[in-house]
Image (cartoon, rainbow, N blue to C red; front, side):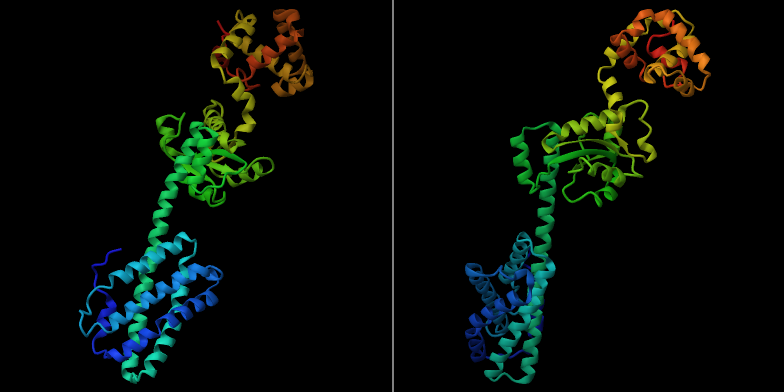
Length: 426
């Protein structure tokens, strides 16, 4: 805090006449005034109840006494010192007090209340001492004005210290939280994560859930997700440059089990992709799952429509997409019997076979799924059996067909291009 600004209290000294005898009388009362001031603050401000006792009470009393001594020095400064001299030491002490109160967790309201109570008690006791020393009414009025101006100046310095401490500590803690988030995404060891969480003053939850969403939608979501939610907006791994610039990541505590549905409700109207809940030290896997879900071809446009995507609803697609080359080889091998057919015929038989397998051979259900007559289903499956023969009764073949056809056709909405991807056309 700068100490080269002239004290505004000094401007109120003009015409104030307090002789040395009165100053000595007031100075003798300082220990008593300080003790009564601290007692009044403890009694009158709930935030300080029980906080100012023992050695702490002694220190605070000494600080109050020093501040009051500074006031008396200012009040008598017209005789032997320059009254415009800044009150550097006392203001610095008040500033430091404000920072200390912020570190102790007490609010600015509590600090100001303490000053109000302290000013009232200090004025009552000093006025009584000044009256006993024979100070006249006119001088007493000026004395009162000086007392409260001085207290205002010290309280303003303390408020500045309180605000600066919160601002500084807030920035420092935010950096620690960001570093914790980076450690979580990098898969750091449990020891590193525990130390990072302690440094950030962040109490680890049981689980964390990764939520990817546009940066512009973060503030509204954060207001409903709790103070321990971590936010990362830079250096998100696994995203292309454009996505990394537009997206932010939230790591949301304890949204597993039944709480997951609440998380999804909070995200309604937001273009979010939600990973699975994981033990907090393993949230990297939740993040990577969310990234892979966002990249699925048939859901890529959905988040932009403001509908949150739950990765838990796309597990089969994620499994199938885990090794694209292996899936392509599987499709080419198991669908080889369709290679000699015309594209349209191959597509119709493939989608009929897929529906047949998924509906466990129930012809009416397959017909309803494909919007065709049951006899059409019977005819097509006859063609399929001609191509595959007894292999359709082999559980291994059935499994491979289900995997190969999942995503290669899409029911009655499949297109010829779908089978081009799986090598079913010539």
